[in-house]
Image (cartoon, rainbow, N blue to C red; front, top):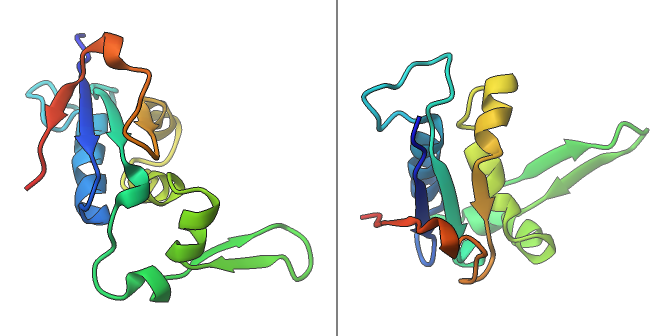
Length: 133
């Protein structure tokens, strides 16, 4: 199976729109050979992940919650706090939520490469530019 490399520039794009496009490419839903139980997806490189936008007031109002496993270990963060700590995590979490859960989803997620800046080490793979509307 031929897997192509796609590159998406997330600069000034809405987080959800970039995540949907990436999830479709990772799953292989854009191909006529798509089937739900086989990994037919392509590689996706996302650049400028630190400049992705959130619509409305989600930058301050949305809440990401995680639990450490210890008493009183509930951690709550807004996208603004996550962006300061690790900017690529916003896109990775959004795309992870759109992939199937289980071994197939983990395998598809490994083909995602997200970078905060415009530089990436995948020029040798000659990725195809995907333009979002």
